[in-house]
Image (tube, rainbow, N blue to C red):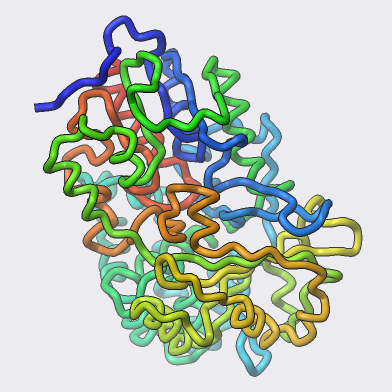
Length: 483
């Protein structure tokens, strides 16, 4: 039996949302669009969660504190339907979504065109790439809404089955079975390693496929002016709909909240335990306590005296560069993290937004954003190892560094309490927990407390700036308490 929220009778507002990250704002917008009253409470002094931008190094250098490149903004069924452009959001599409350099000077490029990507992988692997990706990209409009949602009866079963036959495999197995050369294998390994899991784990191929599909179908854009512009546009739309936002309002207990018919929390399972306290039934609370967080991230932001001097000049066509070269090296890096060890040669995800967005740095200067995976909560300083990987593919990089900002896993958690131990995905995204997060329930967003919902990345479909967790949680509330 579900218990209820205090103050649900005679509520001053229909809903309160705790947390003003992309998912919290998505939940609030969904509720406000239905003519319901909604208040968003944010603990920090600014909105944004994982999509904030600040001058972390020097004045005039704008750095994305967490997320930087956003294929799921145009790829999200929710965000793509909002009038964010009217509220100032401009997405910049680099000529190529992704570059993946190798030690011999070659580079594999993920182009918007499947054919153009394949042409850079050689005759045999190019044909294999087209055979793999062309049917999936053709199904993108049918696939992405199903993949960015909880488990349910598929609306397009044939498209999902075609994807699933490849997606259930490990990334290593798919790369070795499909491709013969290191460029294609390495390119796919870099895509799949966004899972923050060992590449030998089941279904890690799904992450590589989804990001590849998105790159071809909608691109990997960056927002002009920084990721903050995404949430600023969402907030402007919410206010236009009559919603309210209050920053500097940490919520330590549900008892602090004004009366409302529904409360939606953009918090981690640990955060939900902290604020819901004894209202949660023992069995549900124990389940939340067993929720598994994934590996952490160690991040560097650079103010640079010029553009990164890539050995492979083609890297300048992409805002995103994956550093780690071969499938074997990337897989070894992720295995080390799984063992609880900081990788010697980390797989590095790098963004060079200022090449395409002149608002990010003073004239003639540039920024770079880079991170690697580390064990959850690691205190090991990865600065030297990350910079060595960049220097490896861009000799002379270190000479351009004017200043760097270091963000450890603990720093990420301090910045955003949802990033427990530096886990930027809101929880381990393996087959055991991807669709059953935080617990296996018919409606994963609904808690046993009547009117209380979880809408963070710790619910399906997990991490990423797509707003889907908030949208789906709000739809659940609208179908029940807010009818």
